[in-house]
Length: 215
Image (cartoon, rainbow, N blue to C red):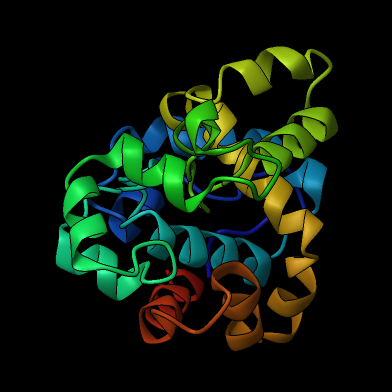
């Protein structure tokens, strides 16, 4: 992998490399610049660590293109994926294709969110390359990464629309879960479980990793 810090300080990843790996991503130069600025600070500084980070975030974000959770589910989708929260067809029909209502229901009273009527579920829905979710996670992320953390918590959309905030949210999750360890030993499966809670998309994650490591 050519995304390396060699004997002298060089870019961990170039805009050309990032574009080649994720051709649908917008502003590859901007992403590369942000990564090169902050990766060394958080020890994402070896070929294996950079490749694993790019691959996992690449899968989670649809090739570094989507940084906000899509909650536009049909009634059938709600029953299948969120059956715990939509135990009847009638209830699912009342919520279908209404992302704000759906988020407020499925994320209510957990992850630091208030009840459904508080609106916290939608306000703190999944954002960023690894889908930061829940008020408690946004608060922990903001406190760890920023001095003016209250401002970040009150403006969670920054994690969607500002690439620096988006990248920092993923790095925070990465470090919190000690994913550099799995990267060092090439354990993409365990890394996937920590990120996903299961092994959804494991083959695609491995594919991205192999592409990154050989770029």
